[in-house]
Length: 187
Image 1 (cartoon, helix red, strand yellow):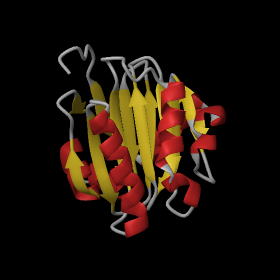
Image 2 (image 1 turned 45 degrees about the vertical axis):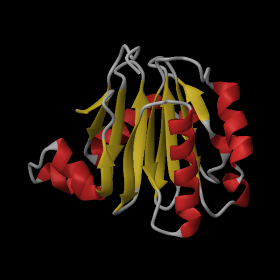
Image 3 (image 1 turned 30 degrees about the horizontal axis):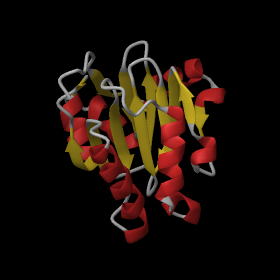
Image 4 (image 1 turned 135 degrees about the vertical axis):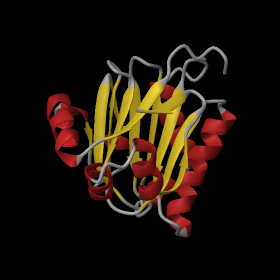
């Protein structure tokens, strides 16, 4: 893991700023409903919205991101054999510069199943990753490789930032678990 040559920033932002960012990214790079691997995006920039009991996994090499948003309500999203194959077809898993992020899930068996399978996979592949687990409201996430930044937003984050709270306080209040990888930083 010492080969990592870049540090991703995880930046909580107000909703207005998030919508401005996603407008610039454009709809073609949106990971949208019905939230299966078929809607996943691999691009320099991508975003997704309304993360509740779903799990979002983003894997980046600093130039592109593969973003997946999987709902626990679709049984095909629980078959991780096909998800691993999909990731391997879209990302060079041997690249020492890969970094990941996991966002979302709820404390239900179906929701945790997908989240934990992603976590196990990233650990198995030795891909360092940050976790923003079990959000307290609908979460929105975007990634820009130009700035190597993950933008995270929600109504709760928006309110926390308006009250003058730090980025770390906004994340820690919004998520049940906030674990930032050694290869990432809170922006």
